[in-house]
Amino acid sequence: MRQTAAVDAQKCDPASCDSGACAAIPECPRKIIKQEAPYEVPYIAGDPSVCRGCFKCLKACPRQAIAKV
Ligand code: SF4
Ligand code: SF4
Image (cartoon, rainbow, N blue to C red; front, side, top):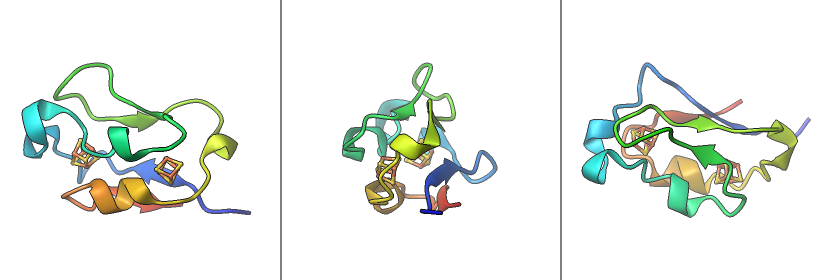
């Protein structure tokens, strides 16, 4: 099966992103990375098959907190 992205809540620290806004969110072409509020740990929302496995989110994260699964 195609690999998708997952947020590792242990590694993620939204405080290391600008104003607590997850840097990966604007990079996702499918807009499936969600954050309830600034400084909250983001998550991949909805059906994982929507993720196209481009891993732009991995490159955007300064803490390597998004992994291929
Ligand atoms: S870019 Fe990485 S460290 Fe920043 S909020 Fe998103 S997952 Fe967490
Ligand atoms: S791999 Fe691509 S489509 Fe999937 S969550 Fe990351 S940026 Fe979005």
